[in-house]
Length: 137
Image (cartoon, rainbow, N blue to C red; front, top):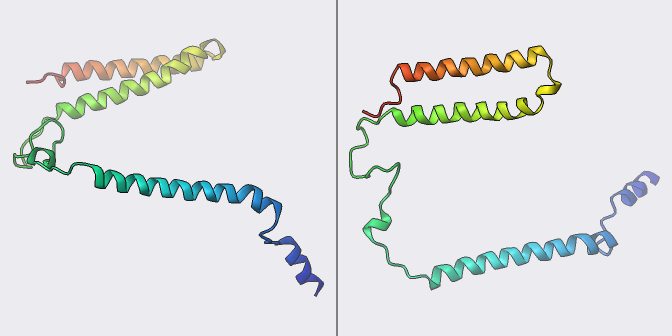
């Protein structure tokens, strides 16, 4: 029976303990206050706001196109190409800034691997221009 007493002493869940009253009660009060305040603000904004729905407010507006057209019309791929090019050159800048800062600590293979990366991006950019992918016709 000594074993059960030692387990009870390890897992002592006395609510009058100092840790519970000092640490957990203020956190519980703060959480309850946050819940009360958020529900109060939600209800006040719902009941005090002017509810005047119009057709323009209720219509969806996406990507700069009017939603009244058919959803199966042709969409220009140039939007995607520009987005992909932006991401590629953003990633290049993400690699180029730390490389330029730590250039003095790199050996020759670190230098030439980044030069190879920049050349490959330049070749890709020249290919995009050669294929006229950025022309908006």
